[in-house]
Length: 161
Image (tube, rainbow, N blue to C red):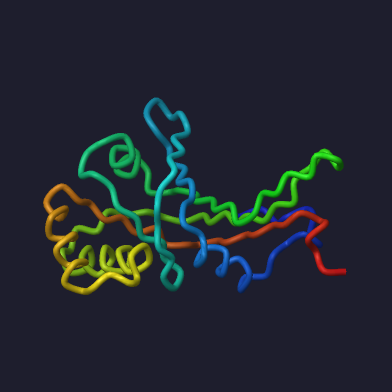
């Protein structure tokens, strides 16, 4: 169902790909949008054991696209160093394929936003974190991306010889 990478020497291991997802701070979610145009949107996220969580408003292009088709891809660029003298970049990136769903269960949604908040504000107090979540809770929508396939690739120059 998912294509194999042609340049196998550049393939990241599953563990390396997961680490890219763990340390990344933003990625691009790609969905099937209106009139079947691709819709790709940058988002903040948290990776947690085969799932990616992110937030959204309860209405908008992203939510409409998710309701239309639950299949999605998600890309994170870990490194992209321009090397002008070689006319290239030394890159490392990961792409995940899977299914997205809106978390309707309040307990699930609260657990997901807590994970997201901890990722971006790990030093903040629990009281401040809960206040911030409560302040934004009403218009908030949490979404889960279940990873079905994960593939990472890096520039040939980064491959250990």
